[in-house]
Length: 501
Image (cartoon, rainbow, N blue to C red; front, side):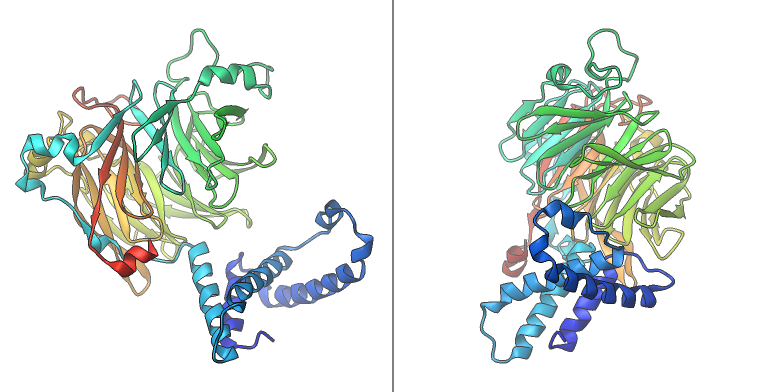
């Protein structure tokens, strides 16, 4: 029907990967194909009678029908792109479309891996003096927050960073120039109308506050750069319009601190994690609460998503959990560490986590235990400490992994603690996917690395620094500075790779 076995196979793979598998997959798929053809026939016959788009939206559509419709649309979109090109044979066009479809499907599932970790070139800290390693020449620090920075969110084009702090402030920073703009949170007093008492939320109310209620601990920005979501000690999720810097709405619902926020890629669907052991979903298009995901037995500390409707969370209950949102189910993965503080997806089925015992773990959805564990990933070595000019924090506090980051669609990973270095790692792959982390080196960072981000081009690493750890005050480095630390990365000259980036 499609003219090529490869094209037909690519479309079938696209349909299969669009959603979950069921026990009656073959029967449902056949029924869906028959129903879609029948619905398309009647829609064509009654097209003249349907004048309002809302009537079309009211037609019930099953999950299989939706996947088939979107797959057909994807094939047509790719066919239209290649239609203007000339091919010697029709089969050549079909092969090109099939390859393009396969590439798009891999990207949407987060399985497309760019091999760039081997191209990263880091300075040899042993050859630098302590003063040279800690100067701005080895990283540019932008001072903005009065207290420790706790979270950061970066736009999809890696041009703008949004950071939040324990002092409740929000800053927008241009990464290239370092120019910063502070959000006027007091204006939210005038724009908030959807709170329970009809007034401003506790987060922006003037007057005495309980300790920690004005702290912000999480931030996320939508892919299109329209919305910024922040949350923290007041138990609410607050949404801002980035373009106008206007406060849109505060979403109450959590019963404890909001510890993590993440947008599903390409959508305005927001996920929030909290100390109340729940994960909630919100629709910013409808500005409404959607659902609550329950399962964690203790505080949820971190959350991450890619394009699929699957969220990975980490908590204080020894576990990482993968939430299959459409199926309303979860997969439980048990860790050796008491608290898994941070988690980030490597691909759609693999992720990396950092724990309170200083370990980094690589996980696969196919195994209940970590595929690989790096013990003492941030245990300070004497030569590294001397080179980086590490602070006075020592012992377990220095090795506690506070943050991890993954370069989107690549094999480059970064982790941060309080040992004076941001450590970079390469994901070593086996026949089943990610297998282990191989150390690449470190970048000087004085203080607690409470948040991390790697540019999609792998040209820089951005770190949120603080004198105190993100979720407590159990240690302090008085000589550290609160702010955004930018480290430029050098990559090997590669024309082909640079074209891909």
